[in-house]
Image 1: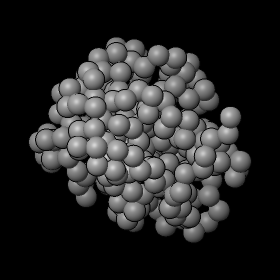
Image 2: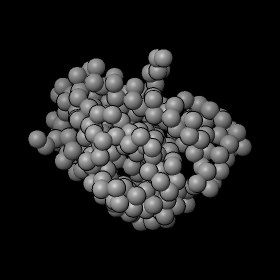
Image 3: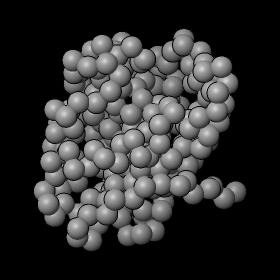
Image 4: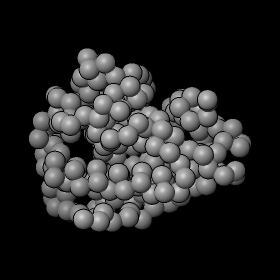
Length: 225
């Protein structure tokens, strides 16, 4: 069964791309929401990183009275243990895997690809990266949680058991409680993942200071031998 290719914004580096960041937006947003952050990452001028910002498809979202918006999966309730529609999560995982395959076909190896995402997009990046069958460069999970609540996902990838995971969360997050991010962090730590955590004095958003930190992390993951 073929998987559709998502519409996306692609920002090419000034030199031929040798690495890629696939960055997933949050609920109701689009790839346009995060595309402007690239210059704010303070990367070297000739960095060689392609940025891909896909657009989720539109669907009704239960907690928003069934309003149709861009979403990676339906959110059924505010209860974190029953928030994510797992069928939708699995469908979006296939879409993310397709995005990775497109980059591999374009000449960028999996070990030079970072999966990143904010909020709902972070949920999908974390879930998909932990289960992806080939080694990735890193997983960036911003202001998010595990869709499997207080357990790690099933069918975890041995290849990505040593892949660096970076979690960021806002200390005043009113949408995804910081406790949900900490549950994911604790589970990853207990399982032996090389996971790093940092919180910021912010609500459900990103800060310029945080983007500098992300840029520094990307330099280590993608620009050092």
